[in-house]
Image (cartoon, rainbow, N blue to C red; front, top):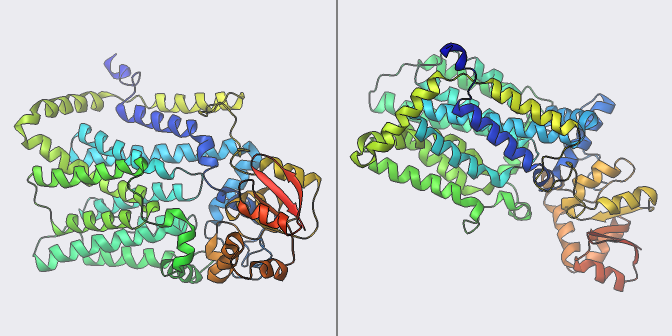
Length: 495
């Protein structure tokens, strides 16, 4: 009976998975409407499916015709388009929720395994989870969360001699490079680990359980795998262009900038860093070069850009759990917490209730299929009319104006989703396609810089879709543009 009873009660990992999965479903409409990029991915996936080809040039904007722009996320864009055609936006939200739940459950498992303390693992995994919520958006980068966790955790096992199969890394990198451009972080993680391994082996004379040949094969073939994409070597050109890109373009996208740590959404990451700093001292552990480089490197990566905070938290959580567990073990004042942690671990070892996770996911799917909303706002998963020009686009489809448009660039993806190919946009959030010159033209119009009207004339722009509170609306009307449509979100003006 005891044997079967273990399957009747959920383990802490199962509960954790369900909590994250449900939390993501509750945030579904927020994730869908955080920006307009999802529409771009859906339009691209639809284009690939309809033509059977991966485009080599951009065809979404009349300003970028024939500009080289091979989609780096083509594989996931196809998946998004298929999910949208089968299940609507609900399918995309469910997939995103599953990826998030799986990622942070893996982090909990790895943090617990490395630290030997379920309590320490739970604390650090929860902090990493909280740090990631600032960038919960239904975009391909969520798959980088999962792939980075798998990559770094297996890489740690490889350098410890627990993982002998170097060839799994090129296979993982091949998938990653065709899903999202942030695969570069996997190679960066390898370089950081390689530097620590080389220092400890050759400068400190430490014995290593892994051979130099295995390390060489892992790095070489993983790098070569990144060339097996539709972009080939051009993928690396795009990465270097982004890394050394224009500060002007970077300034247009908030997530590329360093985080504003006055924002409460960033505080879990600060707490995570503070916990690691404090426990590295209180635990009395001597950090080797490999650990020191990982802590320093990923802390700097997280501080460099707001979008890197969740990624840094994923890598740092297991290291923080090791330090916290060592402090719990060594501190007499925390002996009670240490005993409580051991009790949790004994209970957890005896539980096999994975059916609870499966049942919970299936129940959510049944509720969604029956039309019951799981979103916090009680609405079905949708593009929200108060965030995006939903009603205005409905009007445009019934009353298509002649000529080219000018649009808010963060609405560009949504406009592509609804209006392309009948209408091409002025610009969207994929600023790397437009480059410095075209991006400056957009900003010049929005800021009414000298010569801004000539830019509209240059591209023969005949109508504009703008936010209701955009000062450009009043300026254009003073110049004789006519208001064709208006609601609380958007205004449509024609010459």
